[in-house]
Image (cartoon, rainbow, N blue to C red; front, side, top):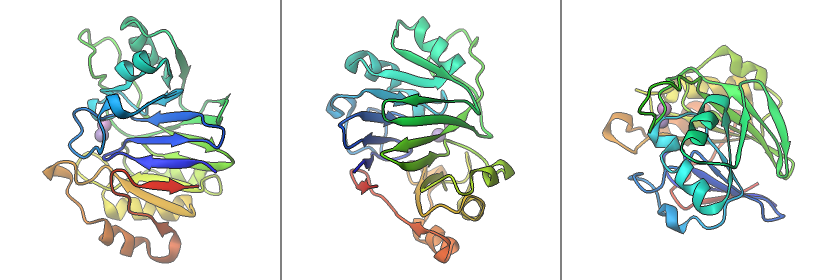
Length: 228
Ligand code: NI
Ligand code: MN
């Protein structure tokens, strides 16, 4: 059975039954909500990054270098990481996927900004995304940072666990995220990207009420583990 552990904001680690370890949007050391620092993450085999903003990407390159993990992200973010000396990379792009040892991972669209944290040149203009990935037969959708969009209807029937931002201000707020649940029809929803800073304060219980019986809302605190 695979597990998904929340580390605050948008950061997760996952582990398959075979012991393959994945970090998603690694933001540990500067993350006010994280339960652990980067040095405590342990072994990592793959790092999935939805986009280049610091709160999703700041620890990606150092963590990949320290653990030998393969960075999986859009072509441009991977290209930037290579300029920073990272060798283990797998470029993907929106709508494309690949069969990794843990299962298929595909990048999904997101409406958001493309700045890459650490890119002094400004050359790496990127398209932000999300991930639809398999973990021991369960299908997880990490939306990344995004607005509500009709494209989410295409995910209907494909998602067991939907990880959705509800913070408002930079991404969907609770109302739009509840609408996203209507589009996607997942079994379980995990609200993220709220409460980290005053600009994205939200009450997840309010989101839970809005979703109602359309899905099981799992409010995770940093350090909580979801068994899939
Ligand atoms: Ni962002
Ligand atoms: Mn963000």
